[in-house]
Image (tube, rainbow, N blue to C red; front, side, top):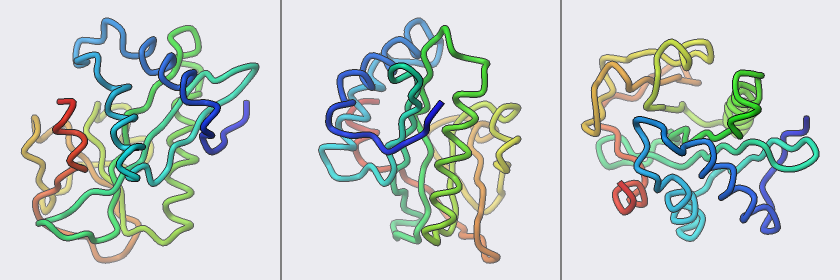
Length: 165
């Protein structure tokens, strides 16, 4: 399996992966593909990586977040999508690890995620009392700081999230 940057030629396949991955998911509104498209169109996909093995089988999006309205070089992870028949085989983990590694290499201050703590904690995400997100249950909002100083304040995802939420 190869993890690489998404290309323009991958876009239809990425939409298909996202649709398949979130179909029937209890927390999905079916608009995750629209979200990735909106982030891409806004120039707000800091990272858009695909997992490839005889075709695209996974995708991860990383976009900027603000903290108390300021851009502090923090990013939001998600959505992450893997074809259902390839889930629970390390594809999502490989995408997350590659994305976090690239963020660290570029000097990012940290990354946030809204998701299942039992899954994301293995990648260094945990609840941080100084960071808040008003978009859902606080126990599902976690951060992974990359710098010694951890930002504090209210986190907002890119406005594209509100357009498809």
